[in-house]
Image (cartoon, rainbow, N blue to C red; front, side, top):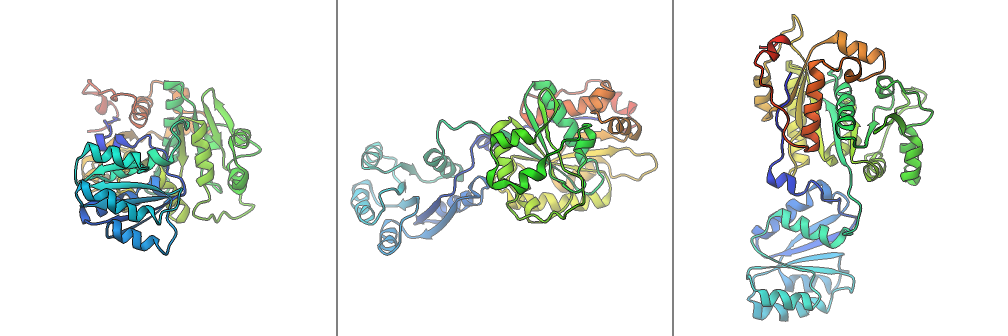
Amino acid sequence: MQALDGSAGPAEELFSTVRPIPRISVQAFCESEGVAEPIERCGQDRRMAKAHLRVHMGGIRAAAEHYASAPTPNLVLIETRSPPSEVLAELELLADVCDPGTKVVVVGHHNDVSLYRELTRRGISEYLVAPIAFSDVLDVIAALFVAPDAEPLGRVVAFVGAKGGVGSSTIAHNISWSISKLFSSDVVIADLDLPFGTANINFDQDPAQGIAEAVFSADRIDDVFLDRLLAKCAEHLSLLAAPSMLDRTYDFEAEAFSALIETAQRGAPFVALDVPHVWNDWTRIVLSRADDIVLTATPDLANLRNAKNLVDTLKRLRPNDRPPRLILNQVHMPRRPEIPPQEFSEPLGLEPIGLIPFDPQVFGNAANSGRMLAETDPKHPSVEAFHQIAHVLTGRGEPKKHKKAGLLQRLGMR
């Protein structure tokens, strides 16, 4: 058992607290690929999922010609290579065709303070100096359209298995428990496996209502409604339980869980999504928009293939986010041929943030009693692993390093 450091790099940390951009329209008119490319990359970011962004080639004059016969969007991004003395005159052409509510951001190639002051005096929202990065664009859009006094959103972490039966739900529940206990921080677990979810069993809960009511009443979900559906598992841990009944089929639209997740993260600092091992529109949307993804796998070839497919796909869907985090579960099962952790993680380009040993008796006793492992066997090495992973996922400092070389040997690992 071990948990490894999965701290984010500077670029990843930069937008860890950026709220999603609201449903706005953005159009850009660029004179160079160097400016068009980062703007297009910004449009692919998960925080821009609700916004509509379109990039045109051409500068201020092209924009003025376009809007002479078309309404202006909420935001116009304009690149100009013109010297400062000509920029103001060119912008007059755009001012004649811009709607009053449209915001304009200018990307110029001259670092001129006097120009910046004059532009802002005339109502230009921001002036950026090329070259720009996608982070500059996202930062400006967030500053213009996200209320500065808006409450911070909770962190959404999606837990998913590379294969059915790898213990992703058990991992999600125990790590959520660790976060709630270690940091006295409110955690909401949402069991998204409506027909076969096990969170209610693992926490010994039998609520009359749960996630089904939230999903099928998405049009009226709010903080008060959600609070009524939450089952209290511990002082800081609440559960949106799945019905685990087959009295209906659950064929969801792509955005079925979006309103629920947005409401949950307004009320809790940490939201754990227990995502079933299926691949369809709604699971793709949920995974692509999560702040972090934890991928649980067991060390065999089928898991490696599935994990590779998931990692590659999610990297394409989330080009500006860290790749999924990897946990290897049920490690060192007797008589089972296994792929060593290093060989498993190498083709994925990931280092595991945790290795959980195979111990069916201990985990089975906890599951059958409806309790977490930390409650039934607090000194078990896996409990320490869950605690360390909790530190990694919440960014609460460096995970502890094991100094005793014999720990892995005591677990039967080499």
